[in-house]
Image (cartoon, rainbow, N blue to C red; front, side, top):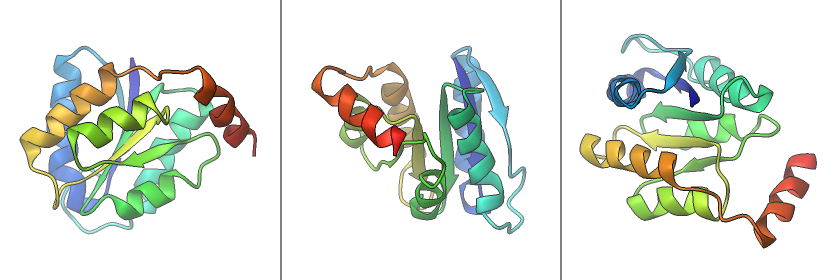
Length: 143
């Protein structure tokens, strides 16, 4: 799977850990930065990660920040992106199963690294249940 990655300085360490896991799992990655813990303006890195998903260059994306809130807000401004801010295994699973999220936002300051890695695994392997929900998601994408 092709996956985009984007973070600000507060999510950099977690992005790097997730990046290593994704490489280990055999995914093709497009990391748009940031590439250090030096302070940056997060939209400069989050929007390009989301745009890769919206254009179809990547099937899914991950964005990281201190809380993940700002990152989710920026990603969700990109037409065609359904970014879920998740905080547990269940929220990650449900964001795929019920909402067909194509970008996952995680806050490095709020989620333990091992939990975040397990959230990533679950999020990647959970399929959208489709059916009655798919029409609603397609309608939202058309707006």
